[in-house]
Image 1 (cartoon, rainbow, N blue to C red):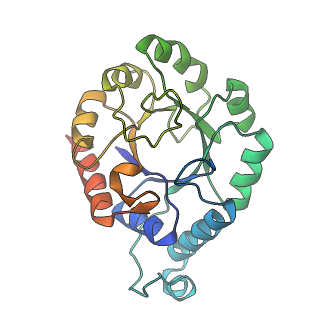
Image 2 (image 1 turned 180 degrees about the horizontal axis):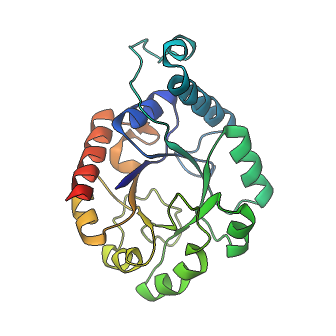
Length: 237
């Protein structure tokens, strides 16, 4: 069971997520989001985390935490994901390269042609309003996902907001798609409900942002660790 912690805005939270065992770390480049973070800040966070993993004895002094606590222990490098809404191809490529990111999550109305042009460096987030919409839309994008990542992300439907709503998604809809695609499940997940979501949907992975926050853009580290542990436990059941 893969776990993605999304909406990260600072190094301390990113390190906590990595230490907890998150497989993917997400950074939001959509300026209307309360979890938006500028590319330059993401580049610094990613560089610091890569340095800590590559040279832990040196990087702890180069990139101290804000309160000078002992460095986190991280045993493997997560996959770094940038979240975009209706970007151009050039915007995605330039941001991925400038920030040292591995994948793009496209969370708007991007056409399949944009994913094809990104050649395995992106996957599509869907917010289907109905099961029929999901069944029609998913096959258009699933085959274009990265070889080592999800085919699709399915989030809760909202008529205007682009995710991060806290609304629980349609698990029955997602379950049908998860039987055919490597599905990353999002939408109102928390440490309290993620095990039930996994049991019903059986996704490739789960994605959380607001469900482990103390405030928008600031993670609650206890809830973050509880979420990862609950997801791991449910995935192994």
